[in-house]
Length: 434
Image (cartoon, rainbow, N blue to C red; front, side, top):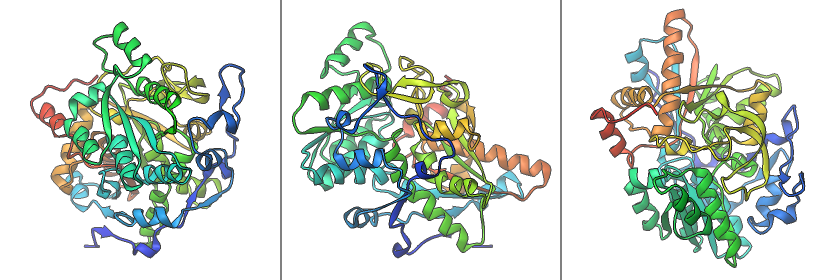
């Protein structure tokens, strides 16, 4: 049997991020100032972001160097391994070959430090002392807490209330790395107090939490805001995932027929798939790219492609993206990282152009897939990652029916060690589909 684990030497870790904006067949529509409906200028973003990130956000340069200081921290867990899922293949009885890129080996347990380290670094270089952010399931909040700890900065995390209550040890991890975390909507901001008064029993949403974090940053001196997904520079930072995966599969003479990733705001899917989409654009290969989302928050599969706010309080620029509407509050499903009303403008652009397909699944069938994976491969997946596992299983079973020996690559975006209460609810049959 061929080796289960494919690793790279740390010297093979990418030295540049890939910026797919340089290669998009259809140029991105610019973010708009909601007051004027004119394209937003770099100066208008300066109150929220450091100059280096603004430049990356608006860049059309194909490759951007990863600073040595960032690569030094990446080396704590990068390059991350690719595994061949032999035991899952055997259980399914499929002729397909299944590989997965395991981002749960990072200190924070997910792919999120790939961008949190970069964002904290660029803020530190410009003298920023404090960063605010939102978090859904807590992966992003803990990743930014880790990064701010490394660069000796304060961090305030607004965590969506449903996840704050479901995942207590994510809160503990955020505190462990020196950050402050509060449930959103919170009493700490004007908008949070407004929502709590109008909807006292709300489960919260990423849109609300974003509004709170932006308000906090705007009102406090030497504070900037940081976003864990959606924006162009975040997508770019994550491409270390796919760039590594390409090198790893080359070592075993494989190229995927399909690349699958869970998709909330889009950063995990982007990180794994963008290098492969470049090959599609260049006419070199034609891997199918599948975005997987929850049926409770089906942004791509049921949303509209139009300009919308990234937050509930209408404080962000208008972004051209697939959206369910910025006031949409999804059910309190346990894949908290996928409960976002909008989608990355780049992912939206590629989906509209047919480079990406999308599908959605209900919560219980996603947990069914997670259990199948854990009992075969031995790794407990995050509920978000389990969406990609569900899609992978479905694709592999189709190969079983047709006899096709396809190669599947999916992103295991994070482990589920802080989600055991959700698994307990699953085994106790206390989960609903919405």
